[in-house]
Image (cartoon, rainbow, N blue to C red; front, side, top):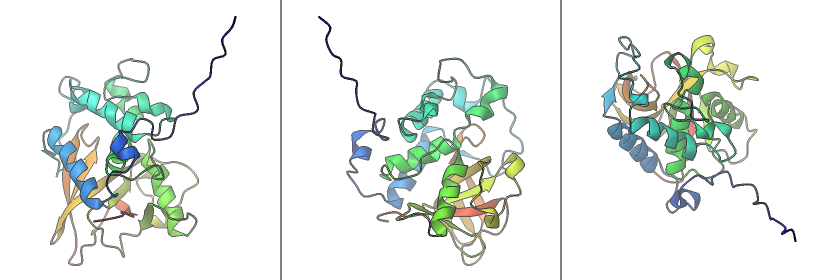
Length: 248
C-alpha cells in the first residue's frame, strides 16, 4: 500500500529569519538598525577605511571574509538576509552554494554588501515587505519608484543628496564600475547595475559615519564630509535611501 505524502507548502519569505524578526517583537527602529550594524562592525574587528581602499591589496591568506568564523558570518548574512526563495542565500564568504571554494579572482560574483544591508534591516525588524535583494540596484530602483508614488506604503524612498540631509539609519549609495557615473536623475533604471550602499550610524558637524559590508572584504566604518546643514558634499554618493522606520 502506497502512502500519500503531503508536500510542504512554499516557505514564507522570512522562513530563514529568527522568530524575533519574523514576529517583530520590537518595532522597526533606526536605533535597532544602527545597533545591529555597529555590533557586526565590532565582531569583524572595528576596521576603519577612510582612505577608501587606496592601499588595500587582496590576499587570500589574510582576506577577512575568508577567515574561520568570518566566512561563516557572511553565510549568515546571505541565509538570514535574503528571502527563503532566493538561490543566493546559500553563499558564504568562502564557498558557493554547492560547497566549492570561490577563487579570489571570482569573489566579485559573490559580493555580499547588499546581503549585509538586507541582514541589518531584517534583524532590526523591517519585516517581510522590505525589498531584500542580493544587489543594491534592486532596492535603489524600488526606492526611486516609491519616490514617484508608484509603491504604496514603501519602506524606502529615494532622496537626492543635493537637497536632503541623511538621517542616522538612512542608506547612502553609489554606482560601481560601469555604473560609476549614474545620477539621481537616471533613477529608476530599467536594468540592474553594480552599486554599493552603507548605513549611516552617526553624524556630527561636517561629518557622517557609515558602516558597510564587503568594504575591503570586511565590515568597515568610513567617514565622509558633510556641509553645515548635514548634506553630503560630493561624489561618489548619488542617492540616499530614506528608511521608513516605525520608531527612532
